Length: 304
Ligand SMILES: [Zn+2]
Image 1 (tube, rainbow, N blue to C red):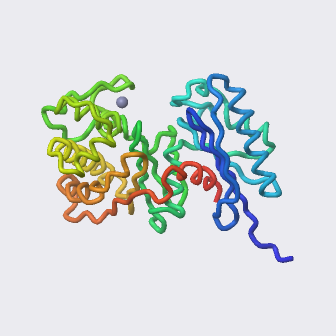
Image 2: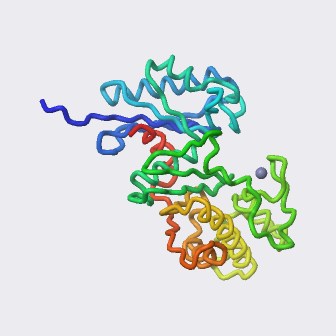
Image 3: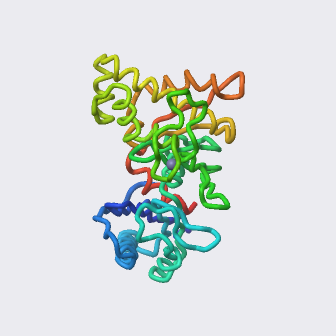
């Protein structure tokens, strides 16, 4: 038999409420997928749950496959310990070392937004673009930078994390901005997350609507909801103009619940040229191709 590529890759998306596992075959096709409720509160249970998912995927692959894991946080390069995780029982734990011991192989762990960006860069909306900035606009705001299909982790393991930068070019009524759980005010996340969008609408209009309702009503012509989405588009344009000025990515890919706002893909590029330091801005703003699967697919793609 010829020695053709038989690379099977396991991806794990470790979320706060669920753990998802996918096995990608040599051509990137999904061979096996499993989703379980995430054990909460006890670190050892999380390690055991991931180990069991990997061993099951190994069975489907017929051999030990590579393992990549996306986590809602980061592995400190300095200490080898988890940091910045909203699943707080992971913080300060040597997750990579413990999983390597449990699985008998090297594992790669990246922030889940970085995994999203890798997935969209490798075979998603950003395919073919050397530098991709991937943004998740959901209950929070996360982002990652990918260079030639590899996640840029960064020395402090925070590359791409601009959700807690202040909203740039703020108007008077955007200062100092809503309080953020990080302790600051006016973070990008407080405006561009789903809860941030709903809170903005409530502040301006007084009505309590979900992000989905705001989008629906705007589509039906409700002027107040349209204005709320206009403000949202302008803020996203400003936030991304900062990114373009620093990274100048070949493509920006948007995922998360708010990536379903179809108007953004026209409105935001229409607006960001006012803020980008360039006479031309040709950066494509693209909707994620793999939707909710980008995180787990990108985790598998942490191995080339
Ligand atoms: Zn913040």
